[in-house]
Length: 82
Image 1 (cartoon, helix red, strand yellow):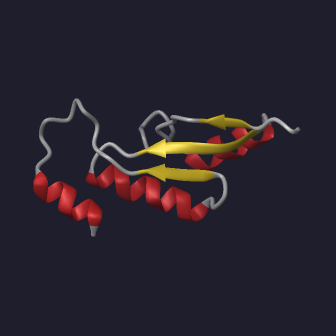
Image 2 (cartoon, rainbow, N blue to C red):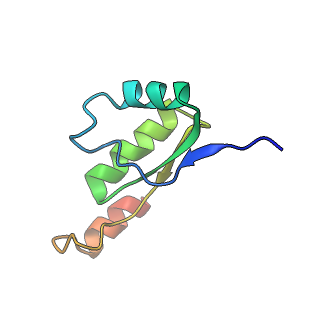
Image 3 (tube, rainbow, N blue to C red):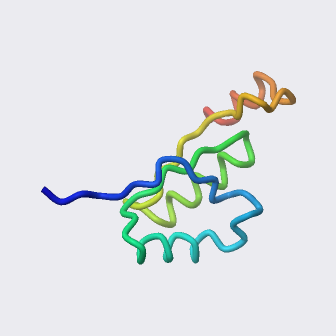
């Protein structure tokens, strides 16, 4: 049985990751085989979906809303579902 290392929660769309592709490359080199990247709102969700498209089989987008973001409305949820 081969073990896989999966990063189950990394906000690659955050300002702390100015070069997400470079971060992904370094993670792969370190043995990480997949990354779950949660979105926190409409713009964030679009960015994580773009990352998942650019890095298929490695980056998996988890679309959603951060529970501490009280400025979002039902319209934001509708935009994400579209």
